Length: 430
Ligand SMILES: Cc1cc2nc3c(=O)[nH]c(=O)nc-3n(C[C@H](O)[C@H](O)[C@H](O)COP(=O)(O)OP(=O)(O)OC[C@H]3O[C@@H](n4cnc5c(N)ncnc54)[C@H](O)[C@@H]3O)c2cc1C
Image (cartoon, rainbow, N blue to C red; front, side, top):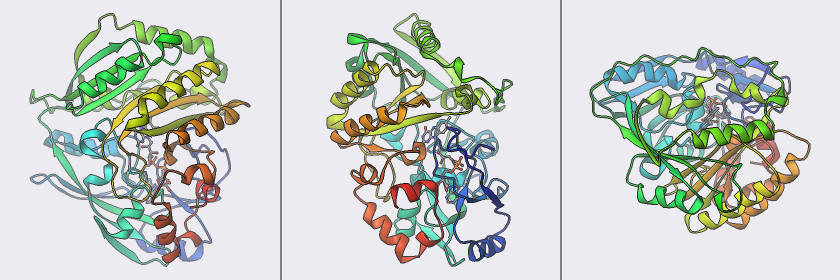
């Protein structure tokens, strides 16, 4: 059984289930230490411990106000199931990450961001309130600006169990996105496109990490917004292809990645390509291939995601991409995004700047190389994203999370640190 998207660490967990709040209270009082687990779409060890409580079957919709666009649901519901209900009625999530197979609780606990952070911020901006079960079994209703709200949004399940949440939605007139894909020749051009198109609601870039020298940072920048064509006839894309768990990791090597990157970059012939895509294809392209993480074989992979403040972003990204190229690291997924202002939550990842997420197949030397990457990220005052992380140490993690002590104080005040622990929280000592 895999408990994280990166497929490691591969430990055996004692699995309990969240069935009802009274049941959970007993679990909390009877269990020494555990972590709540959503759908295991975080890449590292944030949802793993010897004992986990799975929320996935605690997934009912409590209410949906179609006029005002307010939905209340239990925390184990998947975003894909929310979308099935709200899209035909002309509503959408204000913020969505790159997978719809995550739970509502997981979205809040990671305070996930999407392709519109520079305009709309993190998922927590859409959260009106939630019920949180604390380490003594008491349920607290948390609203914006409460200390428990600030600590729990981005708090990685370490403040308690989010039972249910009320979120506000965004009005749409179509299930389609009008997109423009712009091919760039180097990093400067990629940054210039992001900046000149910053008024567009959604933006994201795929970078060709096989590029060398003056081509470094070239890629495809995708920008877009919901269409106004009135088409709300939503039939969810369900993928027909599944990658089996026995897939040999040899499939991913520097030659296949090079070929993939070459084709992906060059198959767009024109500088600018316009298209209309269903939101499934625009927001969740990877969901189209079931269990694509199996492509990395049984040892798995690491997604390294960091963010750099705006003033440092270009210089830092340039140095990092050159470093990756010089180390002979290869990746077919490297995603660059633009971010707006940081929010008040204690551990939310985004700050005003740019982030890069890159997948690397696990190898013996990878940890040493990533350690060197950490040093460059920290030199540019950057942060590492906990939802993707499986290896950062305490000192490096906390260096640029300036509200870390407020988080630790809350954990102590409510004795959360005695009950809610993950492998990650023990490693980074939060
Ligand atoms: C293909 C893909 C694309 C992605 N794209 C993005 C992206 O664009 N932006 C982004 O921000 N993230 C992205 N992610 C990461 C993902 O959105 C987060 O890791 C998310 O938290 C996973 O949710 P989950 O339900 O699978 O939770 P899990 O992975 O099981 O758990 C994640 C964390 O949430 C906590 N948690 C889960 N449920 C609860 C609850 N009820 N109460 C309290 N805490 C809880 C867990 O303890 C754990 O710390 C992506 C992941 C994948 C696989």
